[in-house]
Length: 317
Figure 1 (cartoon, helix red, strand yellow):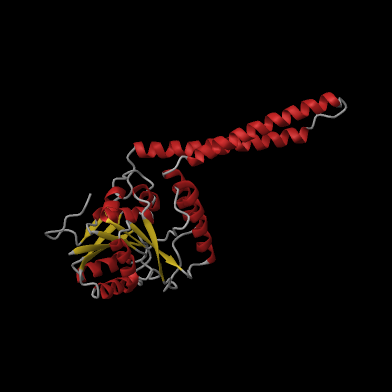
Figure 2: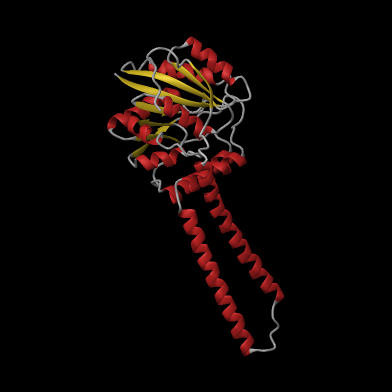
């Protein structure tokens, strides 16, 4: 009998999490050919999410809890859950009830058909305009920087096979980026259309700062294209500066009365100085990430594991 492991990053979900768990349990009762367990990763939530996880773990033997020592972000929480899971299929979804757990069979059926990864796609997203804009930016970034197929839509609700998970958890450096790890393992990916619900309560934990950090992590963690773009911009700027200098000399020779332009000189200095600083900053970001990785900065730090000490449980990693 095959097993499905559910991984749910948890943040400010003390009220919504029980509904998500109940929906998973109800759906899995109709999928009797599968065993399942659930991993709830508390990303140092400021509310009583950890208390809710404790209650769920006490009430159900197949629910596991992981409590982070501080806030490490959604992708680190997913990595912790993936690393402890042991299911033949692993399903990742949100804790706010917007991703329909009762449609997980659609994702699993596609894995059974032979696909390695399945991402949920929504006809009508119930996110705010800000989140939708963020999703579009992330979509363009993953296509251009990570080589994501243009026809594949990426969401936080997805399912992958065990071998994909095993490859993903080999990544032990800081700044994990889940879609980058999936694309590193396989391109045999498909979409499945599901419903997207309105948030039951609260607001998204993704601020502009967090979204920007996520985007920046995405195109620096698994791609050197930004460095190549910086090199190309540097070459274009140098060529433009040379041509402008040549134009200035020719103009001076043709008409000696033409005054030397202070404003144009300052504009050129500001432009090229800004380009240089931008490129140095980008290079510095890569060097900083290398330095942090060499210092073995952890993806996450676990304060406590709940319901994982019973006989027979053997987490991966």
